[in-house]
Image (cartoon, rainbow, N blue to C red; front, side, top):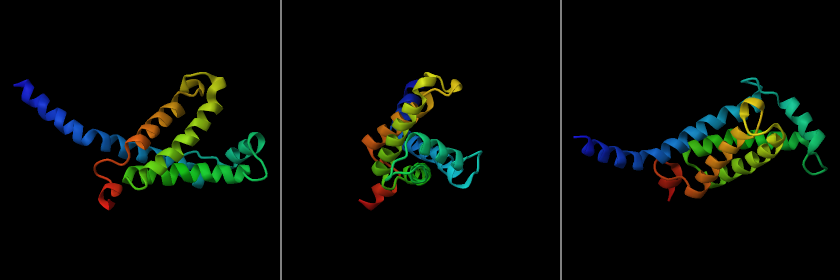
Length: 145
């Protein structure tokens, strides 16, 4: 009785699990970029710009440029990942910025509750896996092939 149910669940999971992870990952990234761009969800782009100017600014990549690049990557990248559109490019872009975020949080240790690198590491690993796999089922990339 249970065996047929598990067999059906296995095939259903095989078909839907990756698109579910990809779509939810994209949807959950969108507010991070939105918050930075539009100061919603407690976003603080000015503070982010000041932080980047202090530690990372150079004549080519100012804090203003980097802050908007990161915010747009999270916002537009999240939309692209959710829709499965330019999925690999979007996922790799987010992965690169998450590596940057991990580096920023190393001094605080691992746990996110203490502002550690746990959360950006998780995002980076998931988006890197999406980069490796590509859009998969239920994606615009798949429809456009």
